[in-house]
Image (tube, one colour):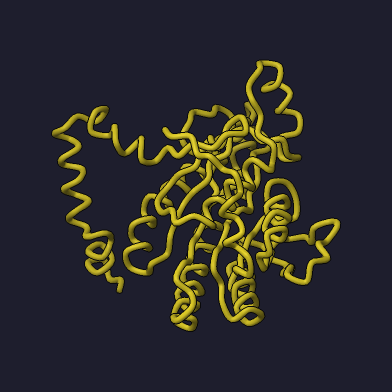
Length: 299
């Protein structure tokens, strides 16, 4: 695990780059939008509601978007491309946190007849898959249209500390954020190799936003360091503005660490060499994903 020194020196490279982001009306996303505009990026925000106050910068565009509705994501990217004739980076930041207890069905069988709400899964995981699919299409289109001037495009996924830890009570939230990590692991090499699209992921620990009101006090009482939204937003900008690929950024206590390479490096130790060799042979057989899609009817 390596500490990343984020000092903003590379952020200037985002000037006039077109960034599409969801979930930017409040919290971490809102700070990221402000940071991007401050360095001269052109920001197209998709959210269910417009930020208050709405940025007055002429480089800012708001498109009402519900990430659980596929056609609104298509509209978000299509509009961004129509306005700017290019898209450089895409951040899938929209998210919901768990409310209620999944297994609280009561003593009567009546409590189990109704399915549980799935908004957390729909926004955090299904919305991320939808967004990533559409982003790949428009980033590919942008690279083709601007082949002489555009060389770098990226997708930034947003998971959570709940995407790799044990978090009792956050049942659907943890499942969704583990799912985002599954998407990261299955796309990072595939999309970079086949499309030239960089894929990274950010995993914030507890961050002081409205989403965790009522919970954050327990962290503070136990002396656990808390992130400020700017800490995570700066990590977003770091990922976009640096030539990084396939990296996972864990943000905790205001500091950012790259954890993917370290986890990969010790995999043979905790799995055992024989099982590790079998795992790698299986991955090689899939041919970076192409063998799987071809054999299962894809292109």
